[in-house]
Length: 331
Image (tube, rainbow, N blue to C red; front, side, top):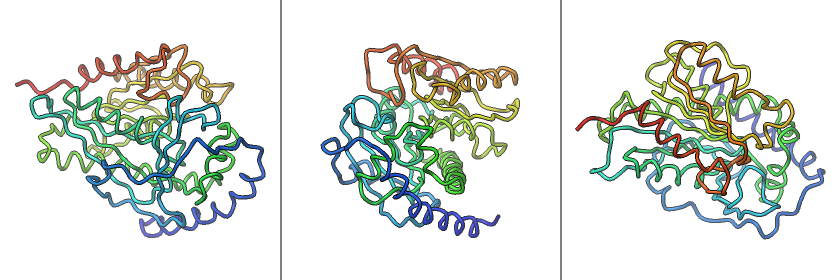
């Protein structure tokens, strides 16, 4: 399908999805979310964002919310609350560069999670980028296109607060498929862009990795399997998310780091079940380096925030893995 036709189809599907949501969302029994959110302006980090070519029409404007952690908060935002952006129709890339005396020449593109309906862009984006900077790694936070959500905040929060099996039924299949295409296109372009501009940021074009959280992790694993060298990352980290129905892993696939928690609600029953182990074994079968870390506790969306649980150790493990898979330039 030509890009222009695909974009037109995507716009129609997204518009139809907004018409389909109110009856199904507002008729559900849901917790009231008053008091846990406030609208906010885009953060200062957005002033230096780089526009990518990915753009779709969205009836609702892009909006930013500050969500406070509570028992009533959507299950995917983590225990401490976060900054959320939704109704993203213009893909952007925000650079975070390390101090020159720390720079290693390595870069990581960061794809936050949020169930394809929003992005937990602070805890799973900006904070991760700063953590990478502290280790001399340049970071680029990808604000990728999302499925549109109702313009009003309360209906949106009721929708994303649903358990995953119900929430997944809310999105019409055509919209979900179209969103997946858009997200993948944004991720591919992000890798190409950083690699093409590597000299500008004093980066090594063969040490550009990609880390994704939840829905962003699904995209990350798919990205690892692209045959296009220009848009394939050199290492991939998938944090509490991966692909189901994984194809055969080619020998040229990049190294993979996977982590999640046993008590993640997405692992209940057959939804994710042993998908992490299957992904690890697929990489092992292809004889491509891979690591799998399953923690007993941590839930979903733990990101960078410490909880006093075993999953708090994941960043230390990632740090060591990055040093091995994307070693710094010798000086």
